[in-house]
Length: 286
View 1 (cartoon, rainbow, N blue to C red):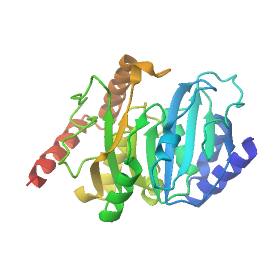
View 2 (cartoon, rainbow, N blue to C red):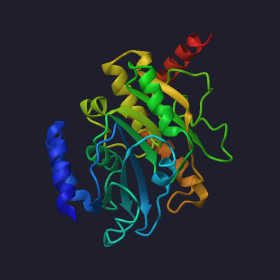
View 3 (cartoon, rainbow, N blue to C red):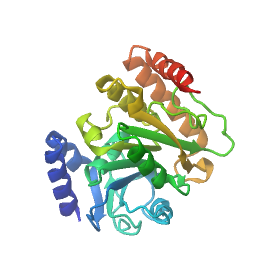
View 4 (cartoon, rainbow, N blue to C red):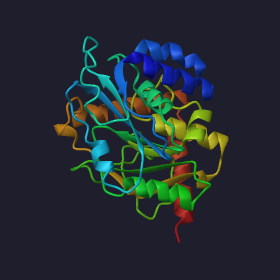
């Protein structure tokens, strides 16, 4: 089962100038399936960590209720390396990647994206539940505002409605916010050309703020607030305590460790970046 996936990854990485990453792809890929490579404008990449081979993924079934065609890509980091990929075809994905338990978190994001053929990449947590209208909201904001290169939505965790972990990294923002850094790994969209040109996610980072790191690099390339937007109609719900491998306390601690790592690498300017955006968002309000 690996040969079609490796061939797909190799051709895609060569096309995007990522050929040097094939060594890593061969190292981390353990199994999966390639059911279809249908051409659609939107590719949805769902990421899961520490999952069991029989764990269902309802993300794509829920999204199919919308009238928005999309390519479905599931990237799983399974809990144990000795598992076989026998359950790889049971998740309803066009492409399913099964990665080693030691694979870096953002490697899963990048490999999933490398399998995508759409002009718009939507990244979602495979443990979350997308709410109705998510794909239509993302498609609409990119069509209505052609200057938009990336956008993020809302992550709702019951019981943490007002949680804002840092100046950036808020799970939800005021609905009237238009421009905001793409700082939410679990629910974001980006033009594929932009994603590959910037090298995708930094695979050396801990899981939690790779999207914020991507936002910073994007702003460095295009210092225009209009390029990154907030779309409150693109919502996902995360019932963390009920999801295998994702207890809420561990999830929040992981985000805090990721924040500290990224902040240290940026010489502790990370909070200034968030405040910079916050001040601009206030200026834009009527």
